[in-house]
Length: 164
Image (cartoon, rainbow, N blue to C red; front, side, top):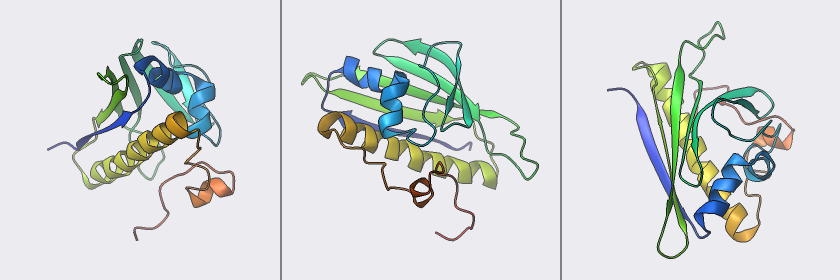
């Protein structure tokens, strides 16, 4: 079975405001891509750069509703990605003027490297949703000081050892 996951969070803000916080590079850089930023708005057909080094291909953007992205899967020892994974973000307006954000990522290989990478990305997208909630609801940059590497001005990356 190919690795895949889905994470969700309720954000107590209207869908338009939540969606804008994801597609707008200035806002995204304030709580998620804090080191290196986001190079441009998420627009269908664009390739934007997150954290100053990660190319993100934007396949679909439906205002206040849906975003589909692709980026490189894990890179083997030679540093060349063999495939891309697919990220789907859905924004659902709730009755109480809040928004349910759901992020799903699929497309990893069915090997140990693909499985490991999917776990890391599940952690990352869960953390992104927590940061989005803190930023929009309370004006807090939860990511500040979150990762040791970012304290040194380096984007977060996979730990260099297999130890937890």
